[in-house]
Image (cartoon, rainbow, N blue to C red; front, side, top):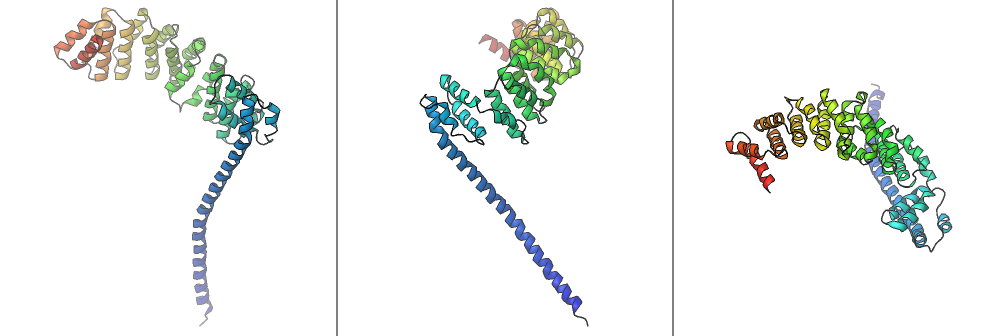
Length: 355
């Protein structure tokens, strides 16, 4: 018999077992080594940051109270430390007010050039941080960089640029932000509307133009409509009424009804009446609320009173409130005493009106 085949077979088995053991050991060691490295790196960064703060803070306090010249601080900031220095100055500045804050902010602005370079960083978090700091300290000098960031491939970075622009130059920035609105669809449309409205009434013509352009899409136009409702632009009412005549989709219809409820006029109630009958309960509630604000005809009263019997308690409540807003207390009291469906809601609104 030839012993080699059996020997080789035994050797192969031990080899396989040995290799398997090495693989298992590596699988155990690698995560431990990675955890150790991360712990070391974080500790190193914390120690480095602490040493920088220890070096900079006394000089900054001296500068803040005009005991240290700016040149003495500049000598403490290495060529690769400008970004962390600006972050440290901002950390101090945000806790101050008035002249002291302005003094620190002016100091930080002379170190912003590396922030411009960081706007092209491969890490989107770093780009967003740089954009935010430029918006806080570098306007209007770095407005061009923020406009470029508005086109960033990562929506979060672009959104950071949009907020920075609106905080500094709302009138000049709204059109550009509306042009990129489709990139922020993951954000709450109500938050976006509030953000646009923060630019103030002067942006109303730009928002109306966006709302009137069908190519922008109904969901995005609804955001502009809600922004107009928040700033209570009276000229938006006629536009909203005209849009409703075209029977748009749910979101845009509700947004236009909100405008009419806020700044509409009695002559625009016809655009609301033309929507009836309405199957969607949410839309019906919005229409009733708007009629309660700007309606007043007998036809309006009949439409609203008929909705008190609606299967949806939400709609019935909206109808009761609309009648209250129109001053139709007698109609509400009659319905409450009749004991029909949702009559208790009519009683609640009557109690509210009396209190």
